[in-house]
Amino acid sequence: MPETRSINQNIPPKLLPDFRNMGTVLRIVLLTNAIALLVLISQTGSVAGLQNSLLQGSALLQPVLLSSLLALYALNSVFARLAYWQSAAGVTVVVAAITLTLDVLAGEVLFAPYDTGLFRYARHVLASISIALVLLAYFRMRALALAPARHEARLQALQARIRPHFLFNTINAVLSIVRTDPKRAETALEDMADLFRTAMAEPQELVELAKEVELAKQYLAIEALRLGERLKVHWETQDMPPDALIPPLILQPLLENAVYHGIEPLPQGGVIEVSLYLDRDGLHLEVRNPSQTQIALHTNGNKMALSNIRERLALLFDVEAQYQAEHDAEHYQVHIIIPYVTIKAQSEI
Image 1 (cartoon, rainbow, N blue to C red):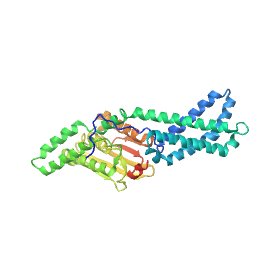
Image 2: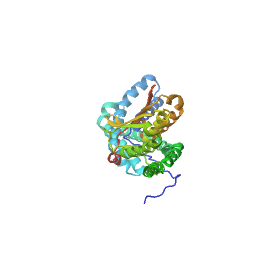
Image 3: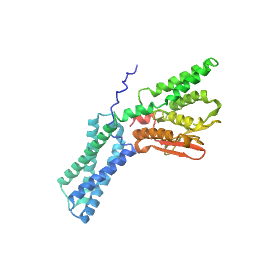
Image 4: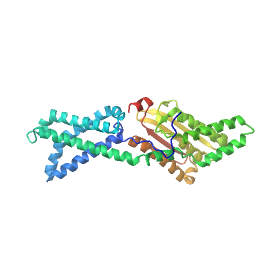
């Protein structure tokens, strides 16, 4: 039996950065070059001297930076399994070793006859260690700032954002058929229980796409009790990877948004189109619904739902996630792209 968690209990944050995340890599590159630039400015007395120092310093800095990023990318899964201080020490050792190796191999060409001897090696290694420690401290502080009070509490709140009106509507719909069609009413209550059990479960960062699709279909089956033939859904899942991992309860709020803002205002109803597919740039999730009256009546609701989803994607995937919201006179569409991750791939990170 799984351990019971208090609703106020938070999951320990991941203090070590994910060196396979594009946002992490981008921050490392920008911060490293910014630190190096500030150091050179403080040590140089003229613009000409700064230009020479930049050219000379970049000749070693950029190869060390690139090589370190490649090494940390390869060792990311190893560091992820270690305690934070062990992995931080490992990162520092890797960066120092790469700096010393490249300095020994190419330093004589880059720095002779201006800077030779063991002191040059020690100075460059200490500089690389200092930058690595500064960056590790930055990512540690960033992780602590996002979690647990901000990161996990926000995920818990956003995962449980099923609107209260859905509960009341479902109960009324079940009551209307409990005598005429008790089997269907029982199925609807079971689907509702599954949906709320998932929303109130212990928060997980990622779940299998196939399970999310099943849960989304349960939600739509419940809404069909009220809307009947007015609600039609067209699924395009022939290119969907069922083992892909996505944030929990991403599809359901999008579909709830489509039902509430796109189908309910229309007396004749409409069609919700859902496309899930894998492309070269990642996993795509598209939800499209009618919008004849949606823009005028429910604009704020749409912005709130998309803002919540965008915030979750940013917390989990940083800059690697994309979302687009488009609308015209007839349709409203949300298009989300996230990295394609599986359970096997996630265990290696």
